Length: 282
Image 1 (cartoon, one colour):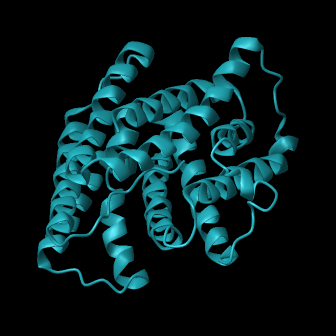
Image 2 (cartoon, one colour):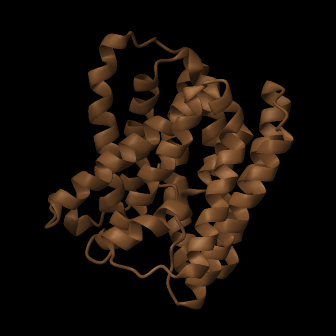
């Protein structure tokens, strides 16, 4: 989990750094290079027909939701302080709880509704400066949470019949395919150093998701999930030393409420013997 968290944090930093390149071009590297780790996981006896699935529609919905989430987080990272973006993304389990009512027919009782309310208050506190100044970029991390929440539920359904590498393959391939439609935006030929950094976005994203899946497979969920909140510490450190970003008191207060909310939801689900931890799957 810790290695996965480091990979995601480094990927966020590189995405924020890459603002000189069109978003579509960065998405291409995320998709194309994200396929590299996945190809090594395909079993030899499935190499010729690895793409076959009995659930194409659900894969399509998962990919569309994931693309919306990925595009939103890329735009947010380029235009907002790193700690602010990471703080709002912690709200994903809150939206997952709400979606689970309609998509999984789960019953949400008062305990979790109170946690959802606390989380929403935290998101509002973090986003208030943006709404006050009509900075619409604050909407993108929220869109990311919505997309990621549906992705979490879709993966929960897909994982009952589909291998992890197939779910990841379709997503990375869809990112690469759709990025070609942005070629007209004027892609830029990167130099060697930039090429390596852009490629790392895809490699880190692909590896991080695989490592995250493995951490939940071989470790106690109650032990690995709280580690994800170290992402905020990394975001504050990277934001300060690279971009001179200092998180505001409102950002930290809102982040604390969001973390408390998602942690309450997580503990409640552990009590009910369910798992709702939302891996980023970017």
